[in-house]
View (cartoon, rainbow, N blue to C red):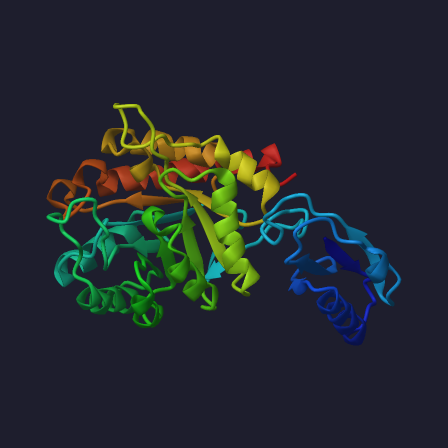
Length: 339
């Protein structure tokens, strides 16, 4: 249930509503909004009797919330959330381009790639310090050593950094040099990590799990918001399927659906979505055309020599092309995906 307060309600009236919700055995969670003050009732197993709340001073109305993910839904927060990452707005009027190699490489190569990404139109730099891999024999990343390289990129090139955090121990050190902490698909159900990140007051990029349903994905985002971290960015990266022609099934039909049911910004990762660099640019166009508010792309100055995911990594000419494409698709916002 959502308790909508009157526009002129006082701090004391809101506090009284929260006290009554606690007395009912539930947990109140204030919902930030531009046009209204609201308090979400959480912790209930079934319908909540609104009679105790409706008669309180300052309460305008009580609204039933039908979805299990309350704080993520537009029922609770109708206006779209915009996440500010070092001055770059994700979820605003312009699609955002995030690009870089799958993993942090040597300092020299990584800095050169970051500089090329910036010149190609990239607004944030992505590279993994830690790489959870299916095979134990694959390159696992340089780990904590790579954080020094990412710090150099941020200082010398001037791009905000996106990088995946794989365990709770790395959250603190990474928070000092990374602007967006990414939860990878394998860790979408790592609840120890999710709960740790819910306490961090910085942007979180939540990738959809390998086989996750829409509801499972939204409920993980709910974990983050319920503990007070409202800077959550969703990322569709493809789900596991039976097709042999692509690395994953790039589920783009979920993008406009998420835009309609959730206020959180959603971006797309065409690199993992198809796993083949020859199709990345086309699927990047498709992702933005259907409402993705940004792209996460694997790019490299010499893709064939990339330490990881070389087959799906594009070159800088292709990245420049994607940048031109998404600028040309900007007008598609007239589709009113936020309605």
